Length: 349
Image 1: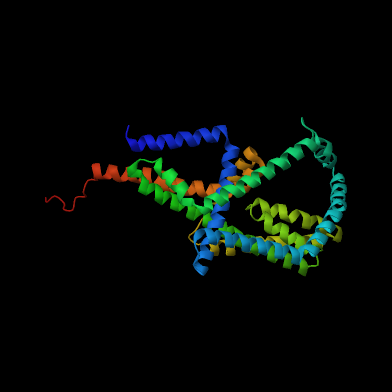
Image 2: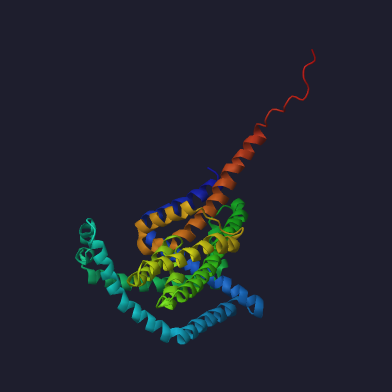
């Protein structure tokens, strides 16, 4: 077996082993890499504007982002906290109203029985212990993601050289190209997603404010955050607004639904295609399938990372399997067995 085949086999075996033994760890590392891509892109922009080195650009970008978040919080915190408190106060009556409406149908009591809190909170470890362990686990994962992303952004060449060293010498130039494609794919997806989140949040807020829905600002913020999860996030973000509109009557519910459908249609069919252009283009059926699979296997973390992971896997399949294996094999076969030349002259009778 050639060194090329051995190096690829070793990488495939190690990746398969990690997927089988510790898939959750791989997801956390991938989230850290995605955060590192965000830091690298921002640092690159700062470096081009200011001319400072990579380390200083990363530090300045983190400082600018932190200052922006603190400034936004101080500017909007009173309204945001007030609306969040009001949302927490109004949602229980809205849920109770929805429960009463469901109970009026013949199938309602059966459905409500399956969704009873006692069933949802039952479990081997108890609801409280599960919530506490999940909270500490999420905090630990968040810290790991921050450090992985920071180290990856400070010196990405170190990790690229490590991966490159695992390939046979004749594969290393192509390995560099594939890593460039992978980084380009993640940067494009993340940039487009951040722009889409800002668009959805802003226009959802304006639309709900225009039709007189209370708590429009916090509902727009929820819509912006959940837009990070394509397809599923927008549906989830509409639920609180619809619940708050129900006491006002079905006409108000229809207006809220129209706002969300309009914003999502413009985002899906106008904003996202313009942003992406020749960037990351994922088939909608593939996105939904990846979200369902990752959500079932790995819960919330899998659902959050399903789309960028699908974009990365699709890019790698296209580069490594389709281009390097299928197309090269076809070229080799054609060079070895060229097709017969068509006969240009007919036999003379």
